[in-house]
Image 1: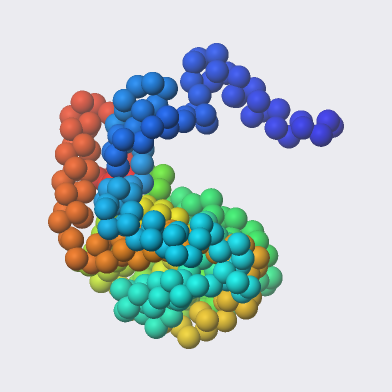
Image 2: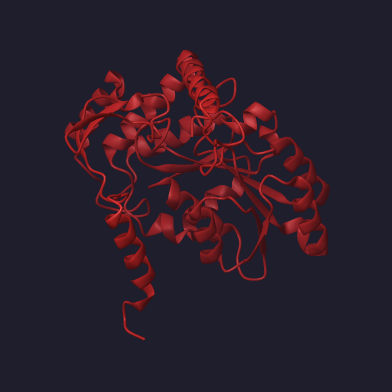
Length: 326
């Protein structure tokens, strides 16, 4: 077997797309015009694939906070959170996230992907079980693999199948970590959190919800699917990212478990990765304030999402199961 044979099917698929005149990888934004428009291959285009749900990438307050932080603290930390990469902004953001979610503890990671890797690989290990929705994000699957735990899938958004999986685990069910997403990135549907929490409580398991696509999108205060479903106090860990509604880069986890603080000493993705830049942290903090004080942005988002969803459905397009910003 030649060294690159593993990649041969990908090369063939890429060539097939090229023959059709399609290039999904090398889409380059020649010029960003606004939060919703860019020039791509010389054409002015509407950005319908962006995760910039509230349009905050061009918010003046976020831009000013980002520029000010870069001028005062430099362009990067050049170190991990355990070395020289924790600045006052990182600590302040953790406190603000904990207050926003009304949770006792918060940790800021370098990206949302790293947050899932860091949490899952630290919370569970060999001999443990992670039970995850089949449609979970790649970062969740990779975190499960990195943990060394046994991971078992249940059918997408099927609380009854999740119940069946837990029942078969017997005594191991009580220490099982269940992982779901608030809004799923593949089809944009929301987690059936009320039903999932009921099953979780039945077995005394633990629950992590990835609110990457639901932060700033769902809930009376924009806290996500758990807030929307009224089950925030029954979710053990909420993970999220700054790269969508918060219009920056970074990730986090909040929890009422005091043991969350110990993740800092156990998580290799936290310890051995450079921390988020001062400018990213500063703009995230500003965006978090905006989410709390400008609910009309969320209202406008849903008006847009509903109009597009039902309009496309009338035109005969095959869509996800429900209206969604995804």
